Amino acid sequence: MTLAPPPPISRNDTRRLEREAGIEFVDGRIVEKPSSMESSRIAATINRLLGNEAAKSKSADVFERVAYPNTRSVSVYRADGTTALLHEEDEITGESALPGFRCKVGEFFAASTRRS
Image (cartoon, rainbow, N blue to C red):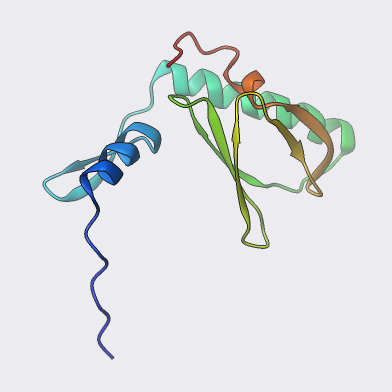
């Protein structure tokens, strides 16, 4: 069985991925950009907010989230395969993984010094 190659990525998609996903394309290969102090602060804030709630509820369940500092948005990936893209003014919750957790997505970026 032969698989068809994936379709080429458009120039706009390439720029969006470089801007939002923390990657860049070098000689046709995807290369992860180094983490900045800003992204480290954002990750620490997210971990603190989620960790505080996990400690209170004694929950060890986890859900995957990816933060995009440039757009001040967060993607949530659930175990059932569904996803959500939330923006700065949206409320993010822990859903069934962390039922007591809720905050505005903007709180994740409160320590960030740069705004788009």
